[in-house]
Image (cartoon, rainbow, N blue to C red; front, side, top):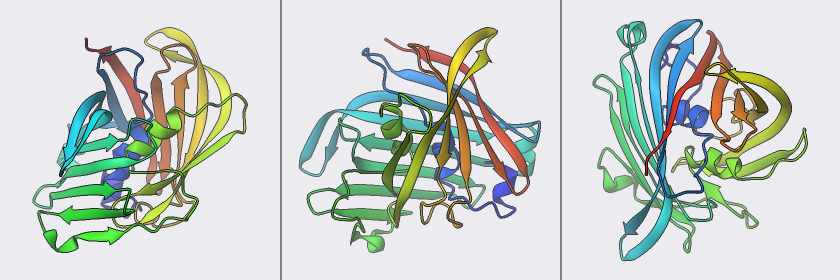
Length: 264
């Protein structure tokens, strides 16, 4: 991941790229979508990320779920970035078909010999989560700290997929969602900031610009209200997530879409 993490950037490893890169939508067809990004920190290329969005069947214990949204994130540092900070991660998120709840959330990644594997399985009838770290069952089940009126709760990958499917028809509109990383719960919000012109692969596009406030998610960002990500996505029928930009204590980073494809 980016070197400012090692320098005290208040981010959970799981959410670093997940929260930044997963403003992507399930397509209306039957194919999988693949988004590839280049990550730049203070004008230096630091790495790359790939996000795949699809649907699949999922079996959890004796329960079977069909046609659930499945997100996969693969990210790693490269070049100078890998020399400074050798980091890679693979993360999976499985949501209910209505995108309101996470069923399973797992990550495997880290830096050099500090890799960590985490698996979280959610039981929404009992409103609890089974959190396993590095195959250690001792973490076990715990109740989710949700308000009685909580209509949904997703993981850090699923937050943007949920928000991406909310309708925004005027500047200033805001959507929020409860988020859990398996250990704590918090709130993530997305605000429709502006409608602007942008460019992608030499083509002019009208873009919707959003401001994502992730600073209120306990356990993911240590300082409430301290972390904002600005997001551009095309306002056309493709609705592609084109660019993500955030500022940290050591500068600015940008994740730009370099290719998009759909498999049959």
